[in-house]
Amino acid sequence: MEKKHIISLGGELASGKGTVSKILMKELNFGVYRNGDYFRKLAKDMGMDVTEFNVYVKQHPEIDRQIENSASEYAKEHDNFIIDARLGWYAVPQSFKVYLKVNIDIAAKRAFEDENRKSSENFSTIEEQKRDIKKRYKLENERYFNLYGVRKEDESNYDLVLDTSNLTPQEVADIIKEKYFKWLEEK
Image (cartoon, rainbow, N blue to C red):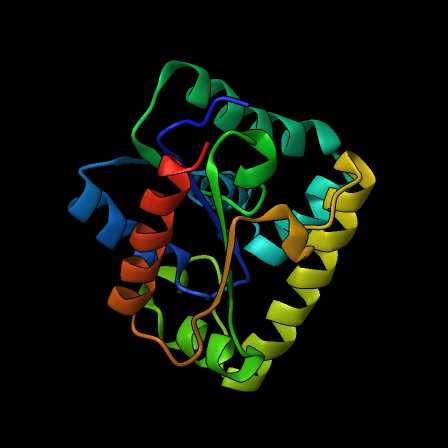
């Protein structure tokens, strides 16, 4: 399979995908394609929070397929970009596939303190945020397996798996760049 100059950045909720993708974009002079932005916009347009929309999409798989297919279609015409999407590795298998993990308590704190999430995820406590993350994780896993027959947390799907719990976003980006360049050199 021919390798493309595309990094698919997937992972757990609040693992740092958005922040790391911004660093990589700047340092590699790459563009970005974000499925999550599109998903959040659709949820907001329908008057739902992201968890409610996850439930809705489970009953409307055509929406999920539309979202995932959009990344694949984009990759056919573009190069030198980052796919910030949970199934980016699946949509574009010729990309450098990265999965970011994070401790659930750290993820809940990050998500709770993220002002950008407040319009689609508004919780009163970190514990509420944590319960919602667990619920969304379960919903997504079920949906992806039922629709595509894949498990996003299966580490064998990826070229690189990193736990971001105790790393800064810059450290994560540096590791990704190092491994990405080595991957490009390999035949």
